[in-house]
Length: 270
Image (tube, rainbow, N blue to C red; front, side, top):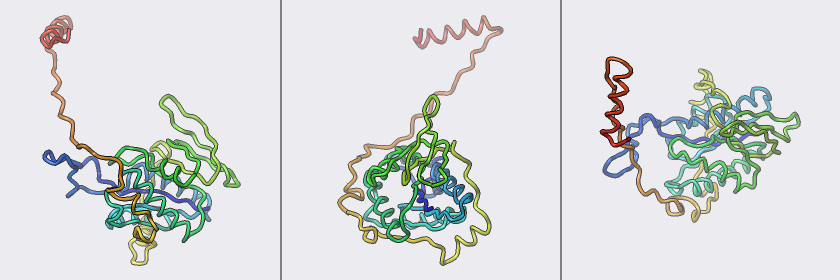
């Protein structure tokens, strides 16, 4: 069995700041991490590999050259191979253009490694929160898809998977034939840590990380990159901080209630 996992290197949003003049994210000095939902997608693929050792796990990503650091982490967790599409031609892609580029990369992986049984991806990336790329890849590759997967099982013949799809007030159980696209949420599993032996293997010069250009993947340049992206970001900003809370003083509950009513009337709330 062969599983492809879509992963993205993202800035650690707990460290992200917005430039008040340009309204853009300040990336300098901000650490980059493996997107959390993608870590769950990788873990589910590795769990299948644990139970079925003949499984091959291939991670695909698109990004600048430093995204190789994230792919090294994926190898150290247990992935077998990694492919990175890194090219200025795909820089600035929005979700539509990104899905075009990643689809071309996956087709290149299939050409070099053979057909796949499943594609796992994270529900969404924390730097965009759109949850669009996975489903768009599935549409472009004409694959059945299930999003918000919180539980997963595969049949013995590997032809059908049964998933629980999270809803706001519960879940629904769906059966889907393979090959298929599944986007994962954090409730699916707990991602494992890198192992020492995995880190040593992943950091070797001959580690199986293959960097491809847009030309290598035969990307349609009219459908990738900033110029091809239909999405236009008007501005980015951080919300204004909320006013600090107030503690209503009073000798007893009745006095506190009266003081609260006075404050609300003062603010014309009542």
